[in-house]
Length: 255
Figure 1 (cartoon, rainbow, N blue to C red):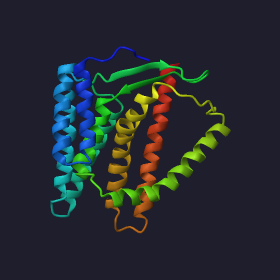
Figure 2 (cartoon, rainbow, N blue to C red):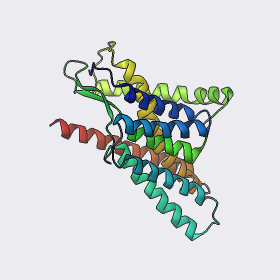
Figure 3 (cartoon, one colour):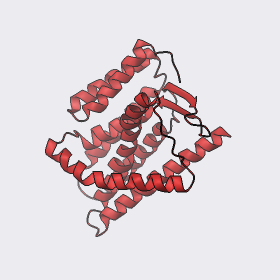
Figure 4 (cartoon, rainbow, N blue to C red):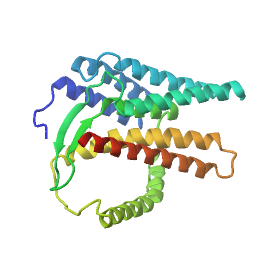
């Protein structure tokens, strides 16, 4: 684990990024101002360099253009323009999510830690580029994510049984296949890994695969009898392909 505490400006950068995430559930002005502050602090701290702001601005512009397209009269022109903008959003989001674009020096928290005997080395970064892509997709394409306590309770009531059963099935199948071994322990890295995984990684991936691909396909085929299943299937397949590609890339890098 990296034991040296990061400089104050780096901490401030990620604090502003975190506030921008939380701002998605408050009001647009919060996530926008906090996100702008995170970019400025990122350049001051060295987390961002060179063309980083260009990629962020490009994705924001594509998202704004995509939303504005909804106001155009229905027809071939609107369909083509939305298709081009959607493709641009997807390409930029994937490039940011895979850390392909230059200008981002993501904070390294842990380098090649072996959590259990025989396990693969694990590294943890706080990814500014991937997180920003998720914030822009949710903030611009969806607007405020505010919901009432009743709506939260209803969502949890519906999701909890499915999530619980899915997690249990995956654990049993993974252990049975020999992919996982039961070795419970408490590691200090969990205190950083849990919020980073939930607020940075999961938020960005869900924003892209569910909030963009699945949602937009559902709207595109809204008149189709199987629109819901088409959207869910496409979202699941693209997410699965992305995970497999990431696993393969990590395996090749370890060779």
